[in-house]
Length: 261
Image (cartoon, rainbow, N blue to C red; front, side):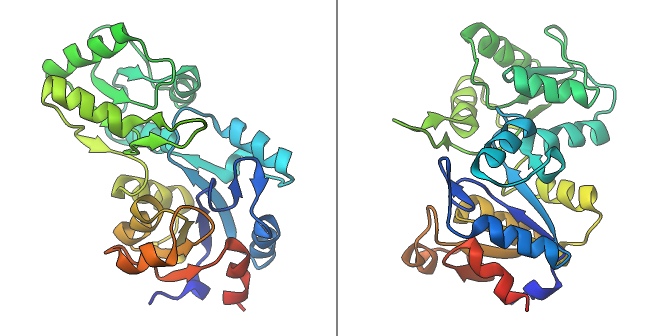
């Protein structure tokens, strides 16, 4: 088992891990504050590419936690950093809402509607059929194809929303193309992005979350310390039956600081 006491950066999933809906999971925020007092870095990492960092800061503030935009890392940021490092100066045709488009522009990435160099599929909550069809046309031309994350659904009430994973299947059925690379949890490009952003090796990073197939798999795939909490989607029975095993399994985030003492 990896040693959680050696961790310098704790990455936290959000919904189901530190809060559910608009309600803090008991003791989560105090635990995060305690980690900071112990000299640890705390960052929230989400796959949702339809919201800006400022949206999450506002949500956390409303629940009583003092976060800044520097405390948020999203699959949008991972994607922009990857493009900046591997496709610098290239133009992008983006399927994404205005908030995702603003993130790309913040990184200096030029968005175009004609003759793009690369294609990016984001969680487009403003998707139109015309833009989707145009994306498929560009795919048929052989343009490089990136997806910001692989989630099939985005949890919502009264029903889950189709997320990028579902869109990827639709696009594949139409064009025969899968993404050339997928960002976000549980993929390794996201892990590389985290290590580069914070300047830390894998063994100094922990991923804390409630989902085996994204959060814990992300930790396993990237050599991070993985911490599963039973406050959201996963039960102890599900963990026992799964091939994906966490280094640590806890009832909730509030139990983490005691492991470091």
